[in-house]
Image (cartoon, rainbow, N blue to C red; front, side, top):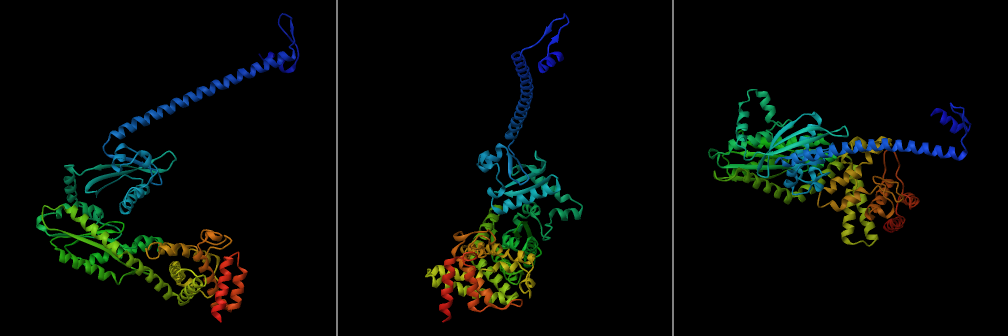
Length: 533
């Protein structure tokens, strides 16, 4: 074979053993080379096919195995699922589809915030985050939809090397062993362990587990009438978003202390989770329940976190007869609490915004003057442009509130007597986003939020926070930008002398087409000159 290959590529003759010389022609050489290449190609195809066949066989084996596992999971009446590292569903069994009345395709890739109300979603998320953090199995029991569920969650190592969360949720409402299991917990001898088992670590109040077990013991005719108060802290999410979770935790702790102080020693105050609390009042009629709620509201009036006044939405109901379902009484109290939250939402939001502005202006007198000046300039500009009365009102209010996001800044930064560093400017540049979050939380100011978010955008697209350009910037935000710049230039500052009107207007005209809308610049200059006469 070696001699033959040598012959092919050297174009020389080859002498056989019997003395015969072989010399191949060029066409013969070409043919034999092609034949050799075809042979090698066939070998490659053969080995690739064997590899593909093996992979296909393994894939089919894995797929068959998955279908077998899925069949077993679908046969289980319990809710079984797996979530990825982002806590989105990546596997569910048939029971999960039936429970949510959705198909597998509709559920995969979703998270609990798309399937549950916010409080339940937060509660489930907290449990799953605890599993991901500890890498340990966690078992809890909850009361939901007038049923009792045992939830088992555990870490799952998924294919990308990250951990997700697996869960098995069992309906134990009719489980005869459920009450026995509750009663067994009373046999715990270790007081420290029992305290940890039943106590919320943040507030020191009883926790959800204690409530779920104790409610059956308290639901006795000797305790009638039994009143239940449901409580929900107002503004916790906003506090977390603006001032951080440490301030949110402080809000929860102070609210919990007020609830505890307003109640009697025989009353049971429980933090169910997040911003939700329940108070169980044995041998308490409706009149006394209302008195306790009044004490809670009165005591909260003097409590503030940062610039927020603490407030809680409350609702109650009373069980009068042994035949009444205690959980229906609790649901009725919860409905009344949500009604209280809805009815007072406007007042609470308005009071919160007023409190923030008061605190901001109290910390910096120049900010109060600036807010009033910009508001007046915006109002005058609206009249100059013949805007409608409603638009002028919105423009005036937005001008007054445009810097509300500065509430998160340290007062020493707002009152600084020299030019700011780059890092300090980066802090200040966050205030439009914070202002947007604050105003977006209130029905009264939600329509102003987008103007406050955009009032530091520039006509040429080089502004912040989104880099909007030209007419993509809301018109009222473009007006606020000019008014604010003019007031800043004409106001005396410790590190910069104020410009006179002519100098300020000249500078604004220089920025026409780059920082400011050219048409609005001309209208603003005309308005200032007319009002100066």
